[in-house]
Amino acid sequence: MNKILIFLLGFVLSVSVKALSDLTIGLVMPSEEIDEVKPDAYKLLQSKIEKVLTTSGVATYGGDFVLYPIVTIVDENLIEGGIKNFFKVKINLTLNIANLSSQTVFSSESWLLTGTAERTRSAAVKNAFAQLNSGDPNFRIFIDDTQKKICKYYESNKKEIITKASTLASIGKYDEAIALLSGYPSQVSGYDDAQRLLQKIYLQYINANAACIMNKARSAYALNDYESAVNFAAQIPYDSSHYNEAKSLINQVRSTVEKERSDANARLMKSLEIAADVQKNRINAAASVAREYYSRRVVNYNIVRIY
Image 1 (cartoon, rainbow, N blue to C red):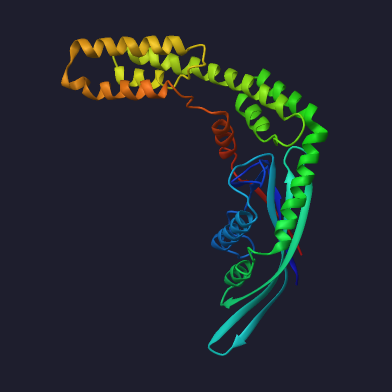
Image 2: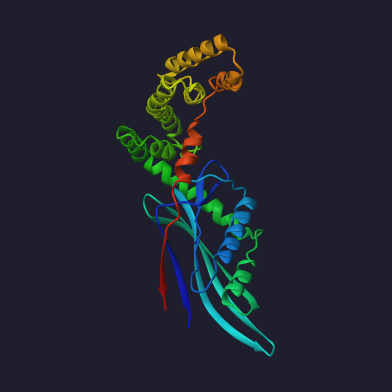
């Protein structure tokens, strides 16, 4: 009896990839046993797909577009061979690329794979996954066609994307807005507008976080916990409205340490040196905020079995 395993994707990410240009595509995989197929089999599939994506010129980074598999076991047989029994399975592996926001599939391609192993279906399925060829030219064509469709999507929806990012920022969802704008392809019209808004929202983001961080720094300073005070204050970027306050607090700690010159403050002097270096650079680049946002989106599958 044929068994179809359909993985319904939630709005989540695990491993992710960045396309040939600067388009972003995420990779999601099941992380639990499904129909007697062990997680290590799916880990192998994940590794194989990552290799295929790398071969196609794709690097790591998540976004609003994801690649996810649909696995169909179209045939399976238990081959009895005396001392050893073997499972033989035939699998239809379909790779779909979909947009999380619109919940629409942009591209789909299938591969028919066969696997054989001793004793268990899971081992046979794992062997089938191993047959996925990272050099398959059809996969490169699949990715290239998808890139064109994604660019067209951004071209057609640029006003809606800008508006959505502005709305998210207005209600304090700065990291989500930054993540949305960070995925805007540079080769698509509207990119400059997206970048200008991205910089504006990023400044709002670091200012909002700076207020919280400075509260912690001031509290630590009041408790004479100078090392924690410096470590908190050093996180404030130079383009934050709280930067001067952070710099002043660090200078206060420096003066205190230099007056005392005690052995106990030796490591604090090192912290001050590090703080001086940190202040010359942004410690929360917009791209890092986007990566952190997507890394928090945990994979969640609903599994539907059709017999």
